[in-house]
Length: 145
Image (cartoon, rainbow, N blue to C red; front, side, top):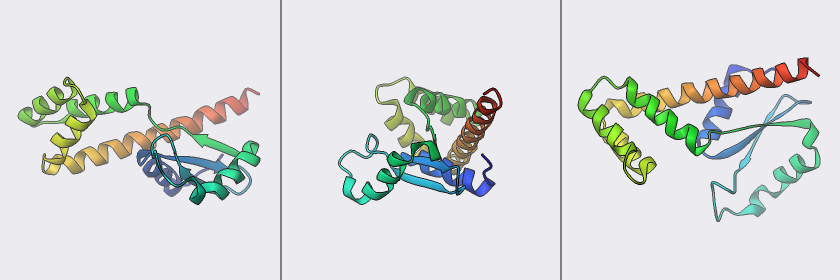
């Protein structure tokens, strides 16, 4: 499995949006479909052809995994540690300790000025690392077969 940097960034962006991403071993192309677990109520008919193609040819595809809720929470907590504005760092840390931490963190970060973009940049880097880790794990598994 050999992916270009642009493909890795595309996968990272789509996983972050709650999509499912697959790599086609034969063509080297990335196929992205909606994740109905993340997009409840989405029109399944619009994605029927792509899902059928993947289902019927499962051995031709590798599915990249997005972050679990636990991983996403850890990502937010890790980002808080990088914030050099002590007041904002405290507000973000407090948001994670309340009920609905994802919503509270989002509200705080959306109202944090320049740190909002820093959060997006940080999250993208971590998603790219996640994709590269999955690629390396796949390659190691194949070498051990």
